[in-house]
Amino acid sequence: MTERRHDREFVRTFFTSPTAVEGEDDSAKMLRRAAGLRGMQAPDVWVPDNEDATAPSMRDEGAANIIEVISEHGSEFPGEIHPRMVWHRDSPETRYQGFQHMLEITDPENGAVEHIDGFVIPEVGGIDDWKKADEWFTIVENEHGLDEGSLAMSVIIESGEAELAMGDLRDEMGKPTNNLERLFLLVDGEVDYTKDMRAMTPTGELPAWPELRHNTSRGASAAGCIAVDGPYDDIRDVEGYHERMTENQAKGMLGIWSLTPGQVVEANTSPLPPKTGSWLLDADGEEVELASEDGVEVYDGDRLSLEATDGGYELRVGGDTRELTADELREELLGLTSYVPSMDDIVDSMEEFEAAKEAGRGAIAMTQSATLRIGGTEIDIAKDRMWDEATYQAAMTPISLFQDVYEHRPDQHEELEERYGAGVVERAMEVGL
Image (cartoon, rainbow, N blue to C red):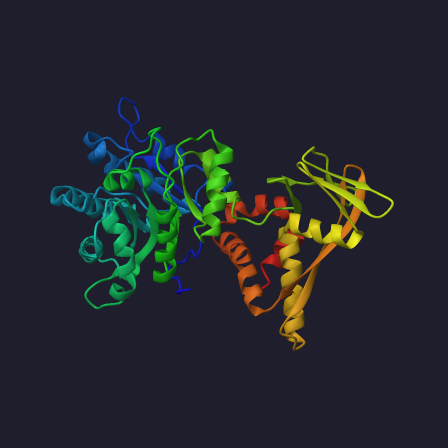
């Protein structure tokens, strides 16, 4: 993985707020509300949105509101602040308007720039368009006496051109003709991407675009950036939001756009290791989390049953019934079960491997065992997994994320210690260092 160039190695949440709301006595009220978020309700990256979330007629006022709110509250906001400016690959007029707003917002005399970490640029096209945006950043920095590269640039992938441009980043970054090393987040914008691709579905719903999410995650990894998925607009569908995040995390995309403080809480929590471990059982195609009762993992559904017989066991899965010996049953159940480790489990395993490595061993076996109860019948199972350096490094990702969160989000310390316990948090901050 290419080395990150910014303070944050992980971004879980990308939260947008309108910069100016029409018809309100205080058009900046949504900005003020967002600026006061703390703890798990506060995002890793807050995006005062002077583009799609703000009416075109209100954008000048929106830029002024950004200055007012961030100059007053930016020092206390616990996450990073990256306003979104207007930009469009096909519109010089739009690009110029965004440039003028950037100049205004970053003017040191206005008091906001010291709290701003960067800007988000939407609707980029091919790699030359990315370099145009980067040049605006460089001009803004020089105009106001800021260090070159001090303002991070994040882009929203909303076109086929932008998707293809991610493949050019490794060749372009680091050339003396640009400052593309300032790139921070690569964010998917599936709505405009769908429009650009002229895609449609029978229901009018957005396509899932798993290829775009994979390509963005791959592009971010290759370029040392961070990948963030686009908005999930059914804000009441918490289960669907979790499913989307789980799919993304398997692709290496650990961040997601959040539209409400409630979604921020879910997205801040989702990539963290669970508080307690759990056993999962494939019950005739349905994955079920087993209930833990006095150290026994219990399945009480009707898709699977188990009975002891004189010669062994009778296992029924759906409409299929099999007579098995104890060893055959254990082998069958090992194929149907999996374990989701807790934070404590992960830290235990890492500490054990670190101790083994210190003693000169390059690989060790880690055992997971449980007593299962299915239909009143109990049986013990155990599986061994070999840990070597590659396994250790893969297991380090959730711990590295936790360490990054704990370092950069002191406002979440209390909630994290309540979730895991102070002892586990202390140990998690020490492994891998």
